[in-house]
Length: 288
Image (cartoon, rainbow, N blue to C red; front, side, top):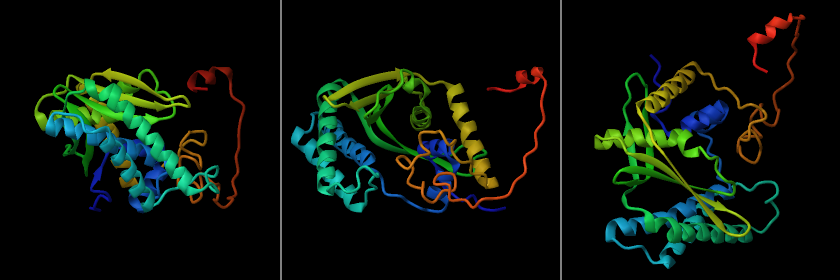
């Protein structure tokens, strides 16, 4: 029997496969790691600043100095930038020092908003908690990291420049995996799962917080989804994203120029299509 090609999946890699199997193939099977864009680096810097504060609360019982939070944002972005950054077409040609400075300033603004508006109401007990789940009939483990665990619930931080949908927390597969992991690790399910959104706008930062719950039916759906992903991998089936999907653009996909479904580099193939007229009652069988 052929060995399964990956040791583990994660909530983010499962989500990537759902959006675009080709992207998953390039990243996790061919090992083509594309440098992150500025928005991703800004988010990483923000998370580092927030983590610095929350760790101080967990370890010492008091918030970290705001200067330490800002320094953590700055240091993380500088480190990630030196490892490589992917500039979008409208960013190319601009001084990288300017782009980096803007990213640092924005990350500090985001983390400061979390420090002032969200962190005082949190009661963290675990920060950045890693987990690895063994699931029957799955040829690999599910591995991930919970952002923040309170005594009775799970929270995850999101940053960006667009507002979340009203049901983002209720529909999040990531939160479902985190809740399942917490139950497996602690023996009891969390009472709630929540998303803390920091939305960067032209005039400041807006906070949006959402909470939801998870039950065994939610866990079952995600486990079935993971099994379908592993079956597709075993069969070598890596579907492309729909051409009108937001991820199938040079802005959101670093593999755009190499993918035949992105930059349309595939050679033209000959084909013949035949058709026939159908009766009106056939319309009931299709979804327009």
